[in-house]
Image (cartoon, rainbow, N blue to C red; front, side, top):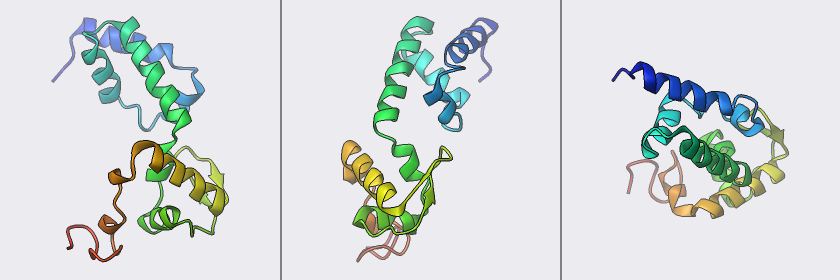
Length: 135
């Protein structure tokens, strides 16, 4: 649905508040207009309240960089889960790190959000389940 002029102005105002935020810049692929609008809608289009919500979300993302984990290939994700990732990988934010460090960061991120969000058996070619939809 098309946004009204007033709602587009509020969206622009919210985005402008985070234009120079380093975490927001690093997550620009994640922060689509739909994400910004979701924050505004959840706060009845109150830009101040939506900005506080976005700031909290960005702080959480900085402390728990799960976006880096989901940028991994299924094989690298499986290796990160098992602690056997041995090569350098590039995160979704363009950063890179050694396999061991990235593996530890990915495992830490998973534990922060709960490992049930990514079941190794549901990865393509993974575990006894035989991949996605297998079982």
